[in-house]
Each structure stands twice: as C-alpha cells, then as structure tokens.
Image: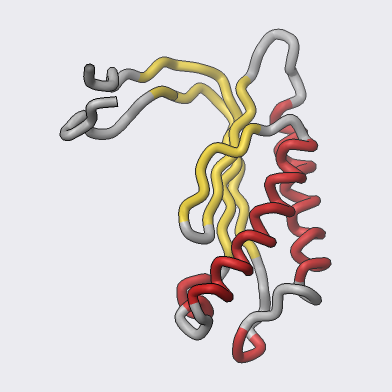
Length: 131
C-alpha cells in the first residue's frame, strides 16, 4: 500500500536551526569527529526543545526542525519556541569550550521561528514507496 500524500491546514509554530559555516569546517574534520560533534550538539539542543514542549522533528546534516502544534489547551507555543531559541544560543556559548572547531572557527548557530496557519502532513513522492 502506498503512503497517502496529503496535507491539512493547522495552526503551528516551527523552529528551524542550523550551524553557521558547517560545510566549511566539517570538510576539515574526520567523519568520526563530525559525528561526535553533531551528536553532542543535537543532544543538548533537543533536550532544550523538549523541555519547552516542542517536538523535534527532523535532523538534516547540521540543521534541525522542531514544531509546536497549537491546541485549545496550549496557547503559549510561540513563546515556548522563542524561549527555547534563546536558551539554544546560550547553550552554544557553553558548548564552545567542549566542541572546538578546526582552524579557530567560531561555533555559531542560526535560528528561525514561524507561527501561523500551515499545511502539514505527508508531502513528497510516492514513487517506490511501499510503506
């Protein structure tokens, strides 16, 4: 049976984050170093996102996506996302002593947050999908 490719409109907050300059400095690191760096980074970031009632959704190389679905019981999702983002920035400051980049590169992240009506669901291609 093919996965249904559908979407539905919902009010939500989404946070996107990534490591600034990741491609450049990862090319100067060995594979095991990159994996260790990312595991430590994502472990700390995901802890903060969950602490602020977010649902980490995707990890793509150095980038992550987290969402907060709005419900009648949860009205502070945008604020939770903003506070999580501020805490992520502070956590990076703490991680700089542990996660050292090659060539003295500065470890920085970028974060974007959007709140509003979104189309969410399974989006993509059904070619070759049997699950």
